[in-house]
Image (cartoon, rainbow, N blue to C red; front, side):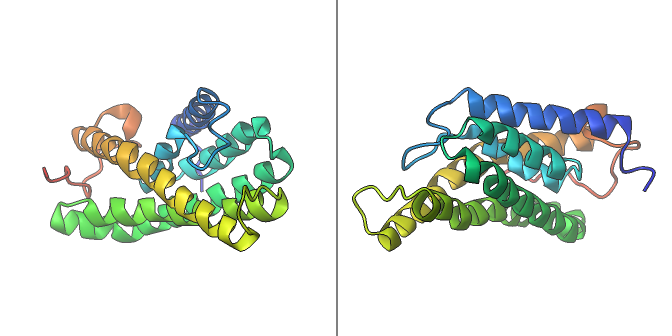
Length: 198
């Protein structure tokens, strides 16, 4: 337990949370509204694949970001819980697939599955807030509105997580391979090979 809260990890967690908030606030009000939410900060949700401290950092960053949401009463606790759950699942799948990465040298499965959880958890939970709690159904019946929002969330989350998150993932994997201090804890990781070129 003494190695969990190192100064480097605490600093890194602060930077992750601050980046998430800054990227969300930079795109207000479209970060919270519309059929396609513009939230490039969601690309950061792949970070638990590398850093355990990214889990609480993303949770706190999401809750702070949602303080500006028009659905604040629901968005802060439920949006925060969705991010926390997705981050934990991403962290655990990253741990499970670390050995496979070491054997194959490819990061495709780890990135694909790690990114899946932020997409699906948000796509399931956030439309509940929008449609059923805030009664924002547009011109649709509530059930139809839920599935329309579910589809749009899958699309927008997938865009940010895979479109921006994949280059971020590859960059961090390369920096860790090279032993760049800010991306590593202590000694250079021996079980993470550089991503294969695609």
